[in-house]
Image (tube, rainbow, N blue to C red; front, top):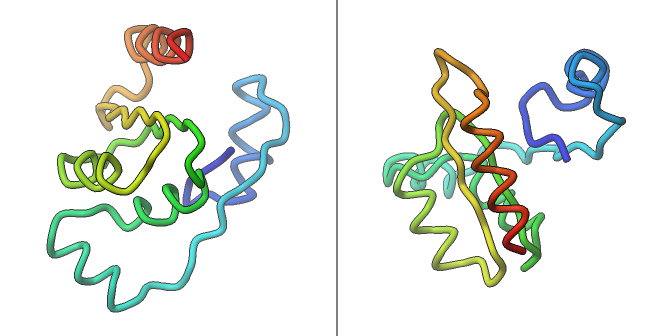
Length: 108
């Protein structure tokens, strides 16, 4: 599933370059007062939506903006397994990142 601000363009531009099939896309809600409060507390604006979309199922979230507040919130509000994997925005996904994701997926 694409959980990016690219929305449907991720399927048009990114997926073919990575050899991925068309994937469902998370459509982000409009910003709210709750989002502003979350941002002041250090919570990423995607966190609540992703946990809601996961609905208790296991999920991995790969992003360059994940922080400690997101990890804490997911641990407190999500009953399933979750991996919040932060990627260095200057390097992008590396072989090390893919190995860590693969290891997490294999522990399911």
